[in-house]
Length: 566
Image (tube, rainbow, N blue to C red; front, side):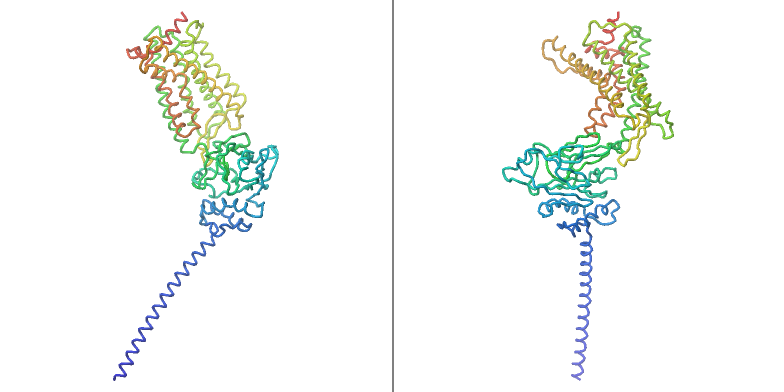
């Protein structure tokens, strides 16, 4: 009986032990599976070259080619996971490896590199070729033979003479392909921005830091004519920010090449970026259309007010100043009107019609510039010259210049077949706007002479006259009073009113290269010129006490000049 109970207890104990052992085996198998899964994931991760872990610090030809495959794999499609930061760090460290390696030349399809032993006691600047198909090498100064090159100033090496007699210089030409490597936040958007020819140029002295050079190095990139609406800028790769930067670099654009001057050594490139994107173009169009619409309304009011004053004020018929104001208002009104027609044409417009519209738009643009210059000329006779200003048939002569000179220029431009379709493209190189203007194939000198040059001449003359008038307005009252006075607010308002007549709002175009904010300011204020002219006209000529009080701060142009005719 006791023996049976003992055997039964042993059976229960053995059964419990077996169950515990089974649980331990299952737990062990589960842990083993987890470990295997983790190991598998780590192994797959290590096998992924584009994560930048497999080939780190390995720069033999096999590893270079293996890692270079990521240039195309790490694209927008993202078919394979990539760690751009690790990959960029891998290529940035290549020059340090090259300087420490016994191999002084690397010649691969995507990578050309060389190490040069340079004496710090050189007597002249050094030039190295940067031709993409060749290994960088020391060359002569002849730019025709080597259009792509770098010039290292002698002063760079002279500054190192105290510590060493020779230095090792690594020069690298790297083709990063069309992927995402070395694009950074500036070029990550789908906007057509890119590194020109996908080419980076690296310059390094290894562990020797080179910053704030007294004389900058020069890198010359050759290229074809740029596509419309695109601009080039010299930049270097800022490893701390992981982006391109232009600090310490300047850009000199030429016909078929760009010269970059920088005050340090690192990886350089030439960025091709669009000037205007689609959103910016559409915003500027809306601002211009709204401003031009308001200007047309107020310019029409100015013309109607002038006609009413001629009926109300008999002497107004013989005065020249309001006639000049109205002629400017009329030319500006017609310019805004042709601008609206130019913005609204469709692609179905025939070539002959488009050329005609372009000629009309060009004509009224030149008429506006001319009449603004004539406003300045009239102001000069009134305030600066004052005496002996009699001209027979004065306004008729002004009209022959104001309307006739632009007609001659447009006729000459038209005979040269310069007018046609002009296309503005966005950052994706997609057409956002078509204008009837100068054709893209037209010689740029024609545009520069008949538009830019004409505008600069009239603007400079107007600015000089306005400056002289402002000087007289602010100095004469103090000279006659014989003592210091408070702020001459009437004089300030007078100068602002006169500035609208001589086209000061157009001068803001000079500031547009400074950034987007100045472009928007120019579009806004320039399109509102008609509003400013109307305000000045009403304050100056509307028969009210406020107008008389306001205009008393400046000589009356109409009265003085009319007296010179009588």
